[in-house]
Length: 112
Length: 112
Image (cartoon, rainbow over all chains, first blue to last red; front, side, top):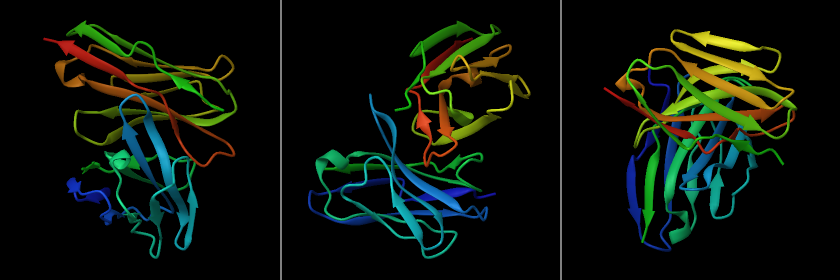
């Protein structure tokens, strides 16, 4: 079972570059979300989606963009990378917002 | 604002000893609480989910209790093994919430 798959696992960007973090799930889950994990800050919600075509902002959405064209995929776009976006990014999915959440293996991003 | 606290931040026990991990939350109006395990450099693995109407949930050597009125959950791991060494995170979601609110985690080391 693939579960939640994130690519890439590691990425180094220069300030100002853009990139897309990929997230795919094969469990037919409606709810998907992106978190970032930083030392001392814990996990914080960036954006989430309750189904294809529906997205909304979380706690720390600035500098990030999302779209949800299919149930399976929920990519996260960094529009113009900044050093403050250096973090580990996790994608999660669940059947609904209140059911068991499953996480991907994470993408470790460094912005120099 | 919901706050989730896990104390202690780190714990070291000899192999075979039972582990007791604590999670407290400030707003008792939660829908459910989920315990996760995170190995270094890896994603979060779901261990147990407790609905707000439940008092406890068990899976193998793991048992999680929930006292919603006092804002506390405890994860018990029986007969700890070195393979249980990891960071354990708890997270809650409110009935009208759109995200999991995470605690800072407890880093566990089980010594052989």
